[in-house]
Every structure is written in C-alpha cells, then in structure tokens.
Image 1 (cartoon, rainbow, N blue to C red):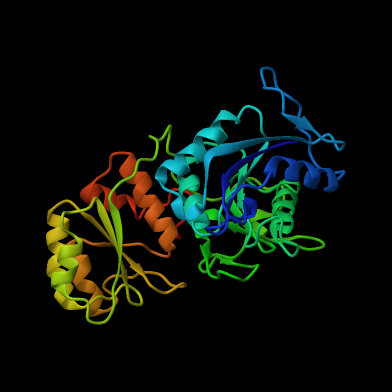
Image 2 (image 1 turned 90 degrees about the vertical axis):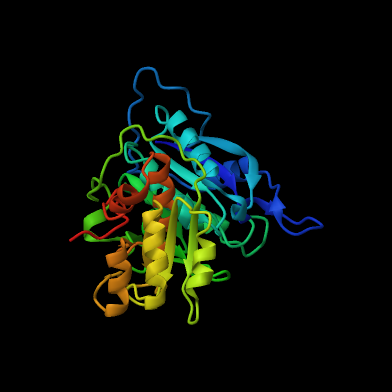
Length: 357
C-alpha cells in the first residue's frame, strides 16, 4: 500500500516563535520515525503496481510505500481559502497514479471546511482520503499528533471506503458531516447529524454501511472534471434578536454571490427581514437559510416565521453543517452557477453531505 501525505500546515507541525505558534517542525523526519514505529498489519492489502506508476518516495521495513508533499507556504488554517483547497486537490490528483490512499495534514480551525470542500471536488477520485491534524504540536509531550496520524493510517489499512473522511480523537467521521466543537478537547470534532463511520479501538467498530473493506455507498452527483476552486463572495450572517432589516440590507450591499443566513431553529427569521431577502433574490443572490443548531434540519414553512423566506426565494440547507454549506456554495459558484440555479443545486446531494429522503 502506498500512502501519500499532503501537509498543508496547522498546529500539528507548529513551533514556538516570538509571535506565537507558527509552522516550522521537520514533519518529514517526524513522519519517517512514526512510520518506522507503526507496524503494518499482516492482513494489509498491498496492491500490485500497475505499469507506468511513479516510483514511491520511501519503502519501509513492512513494505509500505509513503510519500509526502509539503505545500508552500505552510499555513495556520485560519489563513486557508478556496485556493488552499485547490492546492490540496491538485496534489492529490498529481499522485493519484501512485497512491492507494491519502492523508491530508491540516490545521483544526478550518479542517471541516477543507474536508467538505475536498469531498465535492474529489467525487471522481477512487482512493480514500483522510484529513487529520492535532490540537497540540507534535513536539509537545502530551500531543495528540501521533494518535491522530496513526489512527488515520489504521483506518486506511483496515479498508476505509473511498471518499473524504476526517479522523480525530479516535473517531472516523464523514468529512462533510464534521464540525469543530472544541478548542481544547482531544475529541475536538463531532458529526451531529450523522453517526461516525468508525470508532477506533481493539478492535475498531465500523458502522454497518461502512464496514472495513466495503465499497463507498454514499449516493451523490459525480461532478466530471470540476473547474478549480476560486474565491467567490459568499457571506455568512447570524440572525440575532433585534437584527434590523436596514442592517441586513447593508450587509448585502453590494450583492454577494450568495449568503448563508443562520436562522433560529428549523429556519425561522423575523418577518421584517423577508423584504430584504426578496430583494437580494431579485438581484441574483442565492440565499440559503441554515440553522444555528448543531443538530437539526432546516424546514422552511414549518412555522410561519420560516414561510416568508421560502416565499421570497430562499432555500434551506437541510441538515448540512455550516462548513459543508459554505464550501458547497464556493464549489458550485466555481462551476459557474449563480442565482436560482445555484440555490437549487444546494438541495442536491453531491457527496453525502445532505440527507435526502
């Protein structure tokens, strides 16, 4: 098995500086030492090399091949943007003829955004991708870096299905269902609207639909040769008690490509905001209503307070996370979709990010 690592930055490889933590650790040497200490299981599949494959960068004592790309510049993930997502996509496809599986090392702040974005852009990729990182730098004595990287490798060697996943704190989550819930907990991510794909342990416990070695079963739209990510004007606005129509109108001036309105409950908003939403839709803005609740599904029209936005042309985000919703808008906008067409595609399942009954 050839596992390719893409290192994008983040806490996992950070060191102290006069201005706080910043990327700087020798991740290549650290990974080499870690892999040498991580025994490959005897049942690990080692696919035959097909003609024309590029020679792997490293072969360890267990016959496991690994390679590493370090993106430049390395980023604190708070600096990540759609162009960062595309750099990762490009690297994965550049090694698709070599690797049997991928691990993306990334910062935790925007890890769920990146995992979601990758899931949309990589529906044609045959290999599994696991995104991981750590809450503490690898050089700290009680760091979770080793546990998370080893956990990602264990998930792959047991036969994790194709698709983009996120491993953190002993749990393998669907990448576009995950959200960061804690700045300090070593189980800093959760999947509020979907069960974990697997729980690490002795043995690992896999859900029935993602049993080790199973083929991917997530339905979705395979976007053929998607256009690369660009940075589009998508904004996110949290509704709060007292948000005025005038303030919302100012936030939507000039009109963005799309806005995510994080509403109350199942998508409820004050009636005085309806006229602003209708004006935005008339100006070609895709208005997507999501919920501020971690767990739940937007149902516009269930209450009268949600009927106005729906009548004005807004669409609901279903049970998607904020990260999945935002990254999906960026992906679809990068494919050239705008206005009502962009809004309509938000209700279509691309990569398992959305529950469609």
